[in-house]
Image (cartoon, rainbow, N blue to C red; front, side, top):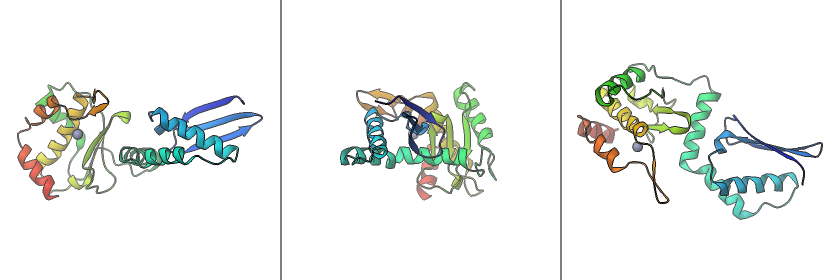
Length: 207
Ligand SMILES: [Zn+2]
């Protein structure tokens, strides 16, 4: 077996490369794959080696990798990274009407005693309506959809969205057996304390 060098690199997509040079194999994997399940790493290894040696790719491995690559969480993360690394249109916290850092700091004082560390905050590049806000733990970034950055969008709606994501900072994902528990009962109890919860939810539903 040739000596192998495997490195995770900062690609802007789920890139993988494999090369044989002077009897040694060089593999480059996007760092987006670093946290992938072991079965996915095995599938990638199989696919890359099959390509290198021009052997057929097993359908099961191919399917496993395709499923992983197209899963919602992964596509969202690749998109985010592509925006952050690959494009100059990374918007940052300063919107046209609202500044996310200012909103974050005021919520931090009101609800968290100023104790939460401020992550990266950014408006989404697109007017996303499917993902209104999310916290990306791997890159410590809260992304808020730009649909909220307009005068017709009440401040409490943005506050609620950020508040929800801030609770994710405070309550990391717990494992209950094999299940990930994202919104624990403590999380939900604390979310219910948001004063304009009902108005915010109604506004979001109208969106
Ligand atoms: Zn959530």
